[in-house]
Length: 144
Length: 144
DNA sequence: TTAAACCTGCGAGCTACTCACAGGTCAAGC
DNA sequence: GCTTGACCTGTGAGTAGCTCGCAGGTTTAA
Ligand SMILES: [Zn+2]
Ligand SMILES: [Zn+2]
Ligand SMILES: [Zn+2]
Ligand SMILES: [Zn+2]
Image (cartoon, rainbow over the protein chains, first blue to last red):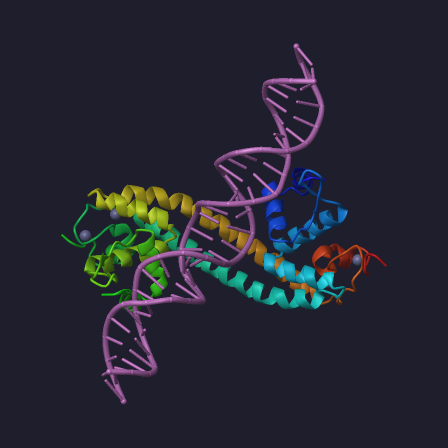
């Protein structure tokens, strides 16, 4: 099986597979003309990688897990250890994204009631710089 | 004012400022010994960049906004245009993060009631590969 | 005056791909 | 046998937004 066929089979891009080969997560054989050929072990290895990726593990995490399993050991302890920090990071990023979306939404709401600002020497854009103070502070343009 | 002082003043890393200089968002002068020196226009420009960044604009967006303002035009129309796709992307990423955190949390919950798996030839880690089917499907290890 | 502390710009590296590209492979048609 | 064209290949470079390492310059206290 060559790259494109495997990509279709697992619904990922051929580039993604080539990337995994390049970083050593997949180690397919090479045929006579230098192309990578994947056997069924490579297929299940890829399936594992994708599954782990969808659980939030980094490719480096996945490499560690695969290494552990490759040594004949149970990778479960490593898996349980690794997911903790990933979960913390994911929660943090989620909170950050939530705050960002809220900031953006209230900006858009606020801006809809504000006119375009005229260029002045001191400011670049009152929408962005003024944020909310402009609406409640003086009720008008800041520098006129 | 040199990089480190400006960084302290605006509570960002010196590397961040150097990055903005490198990509041309900040254009400070150079003093005799080749160091960048920032005047008060550079300070307010940086303040603007940070504010826009915190509203979800990309550095490329910010460049466009600054260019527009630099031509003496009102950047507001560009700002209003640019925030729309950024808000969509942010909402999408928020939803993705939410789904990811939920997947991770239910995995951790599920795993807490599962034993470590013993290595077998067909699987790498039952925790990751089994996901939930393992718990409800057969109630035991899949390949024994 | 010299030693240490601090600061500088610049190159490279980070994640997880994605894209561009020159060239290889292969079946159909003449 | 030969050519055309579609399809596929690996490799190098590029993406965002920093962050780190480093060799060396500047400043200050002893
Ligand atoms: Zn404006
Ligand atoms: Zn103004
Ligand atoms: Zn396991
Ligand atoms: Zn098994």
